[in-house]
Image (cartoon, rainbow, N blue to C red; front, side, top):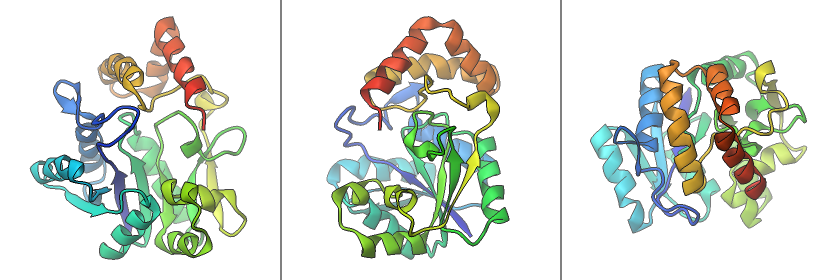
Length: 248
């Protein structure tokens, strides 16, 4: 069974508390993501995975108000946090979503879930760009990834490199020890290295607040939203600036 884990904390060095700040009509980014998932997938468990740091008490309070599960684990070793949460909830396949992606797309998630069912005997599922790179490494912010708990346990045994403990799935798709299935992006996103819909700092936050208003006006139509960005050169310029700044 799938379990959706939302990775969230307030201690971002670039922009503290970004996931709980009012983003649109007094809703925070975490609000937006949780509501999308609850409406889109009412039968799939959704768990917010945060840290044991006292600062993240606010994340736990948010979860209580939303009546959603909250798991608190290791702050630095994110891999361990996900493994411990996976064991606690007896999750076989974990859908990993980052809490700085308000534009997470439900239709893409449905396609990913179907893709996982079509190719069940692998370790990792996601989308890929034109260079065969998993979209988690891009700036899109529309996508999730699915990984098995067994694969995470194998990573824990294989490495203690801090980079792989912080970035949960990097070791999996970066080595030849795992079976990965990557689905091709839709044509309208191929070679769109100029688009950034994820939030790292306050420039992203302010840029995407404007974009999200339009996104709702067009019923969450990504093609129309991208056209809107293209027609507003300052928005596109702001995206490109932070793509260059935060290239992974």
